[in-house]
Image 1: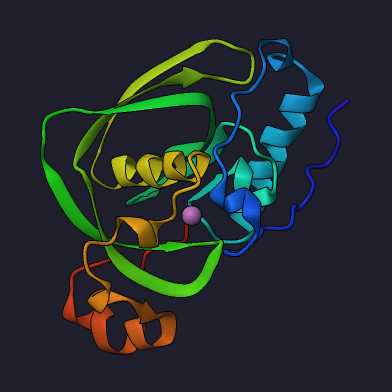
Image 2 (image 1 turned 90 degrees about the horizontal axis):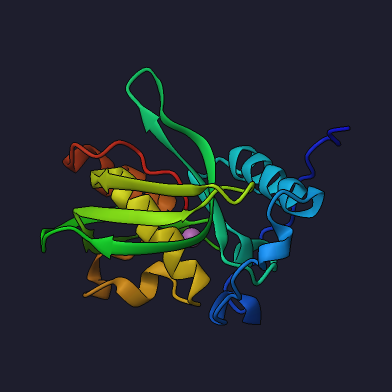
Length: 186
Ligand code: NI
């Protein structure tokens, strides 16, 4: 019954869907093959494109869901997951700066401030409620992906453009100056 997941085309900055506010996934879609397939395709495309997050608008589907995963020290800290109709609230007012890239803005990296800790509520593809608290990089990933559902990209969240760098230059001049792991695109 399960079709092979499809590799979807990731759209880039300039495509109008990346700048529009996505619609909630309709109630009738939960538990459907349509939502299941879109979720599987998002996860598959995210992994194939070497990303750690991919929102539906990035594949030109203006719907409120995204896939993500969080690498841990030995294997995934969070396995590839999909959250539908998510809401995110900061927990506390701690802000952390970190490097981000985006599959829809290939080749660039920049420093983006994000809440250190957030609470996420949403649904899985069957409609079951999801509620979790995320810290650090996990929190960063879900904030980046939620922004895609509102037509916002990481460039909009940068407080200064002076950190903006192309990937090869970032690797040559910045990576070894920091204790950063090489960030994956989101
Ligand atoms: Ni992105």
